[in-house]
View 1 (cartoon, rainbow, N blue to C red):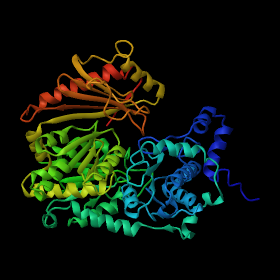
View 2 (view 1 turned 30 degrees about the horizontal axis):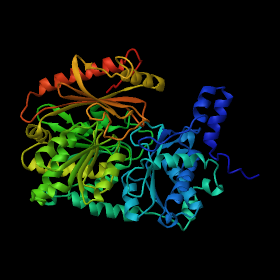
View 3 (view 1 turned 120 degrees about the horizontal axis):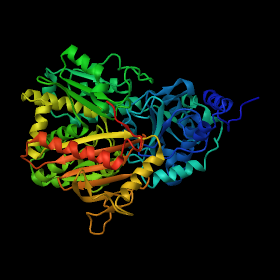
View 4 (view 1 turned 90 degrees about the vertical axis):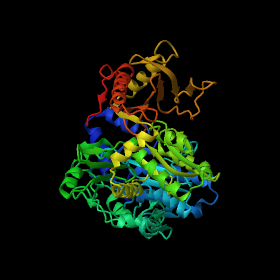
Length: 595
């Protein structure tokens, strides 16, 4: 008897459910079967395994059916434009799920309805999917990845035809379409071999990789200097996709390829050599990279996260070991570098009127300081690169260009090659900047201090606490919004007066005449920003992809102020007060970040 294709066909996830039933684990079953995933800041992201709240064969098929349904209504020419599908190196033996398998099933759903699919034949960096969407004129793109999340997770990231991550109203409309397309359409939807036989499937890998590397040359300004560069670089791809692509990017820039960390250069879905696959965690997860750099006498360490859209950088100092740059510090360097080279090519000051830099609102204000002094345009967006990507698209329609954009969580976009953060291009750009500065007898860290001397020191602190209980998060933010009585926010933090409060969850901003936030209201997550009388800006927000409450504080000093230690001390004091007074970690059983 042939199987019923309306039932889940994955024997591993079926076995998981049967084992939970046999063990009487009703709470686990409810958690898996009585709720569905929703689109967060990165599309769908959840643990792999059985259940409607998990990433698995069935939920990927359902999601793709919903996506197809929406796209076919939105685009009259959808059946000719098609979609791009890519995947990273994740996989889970016990659920039979891998990014490659799930990508093939997503492709099969589209192919079963005669929609062309550009499915990459091997793992690619996340930015390759939006790059391909624009290059091939596709209606949308799907990337199967959970980026730097723990090994148990996977995700389903959707890009619109403009190459940016989907945003409102498309995200809600797609989610609604998924709910109406839950039953698999046909046996073909389960057939991952369809991608090998369908004439509507193409492999864009060679074309896209070639075009990407060709266009990457637009970010290379000093190739002759790169060819003779004496600096050595070490690169870790954190067991993900980055190794081969960063090697090619270096060669495109005229460099000798970086020395790979041998234990981490090949794909490994278990991320066996790191306690967490997130280079943002700093020195504690860069240990193998730093050891190799010491052995090879390399001065710069580069690390891309598993899907190569983020970049971490460390530099050897002659005096004090290794300096691991924060995302905000790297942005100061990259923003300066992109502006420096743009000005070399555009000496007319009038040209700067159509030049933009972008940053998310929880990121350093250093680009704003650049813009004030240099005369170009700066804008803030809500957190998440989907807001930056969509803003880049809007600006391009009016003839404006973005030369640099970033979010503090080590996400950088140099130029506008693709409307998404890109660790591959950023790695090559950092290498060229380091080579140029080395030729001037400067290190990256020395140049960072030069930048701060010119534009003002921007001292920041970014961290988080973990809260695995959603009701506790709601209680914490409800208390903040009713701190001194109903509808009243805190008046002080650590004894310092709070002069402004902006709450984009409710749309409140007391710095505006009408008390309404200029940034869009985002009711699905919490984010409150406090501006203090001492000049510190502090933000509390929930993560869209992890059970975290993140906090961001920054002291923006005026140019010429060089008492860095006093700025840092004041920032530490305020950050501690923010945490203790507003989040109450001990009372709420919050787990502090441990690195």
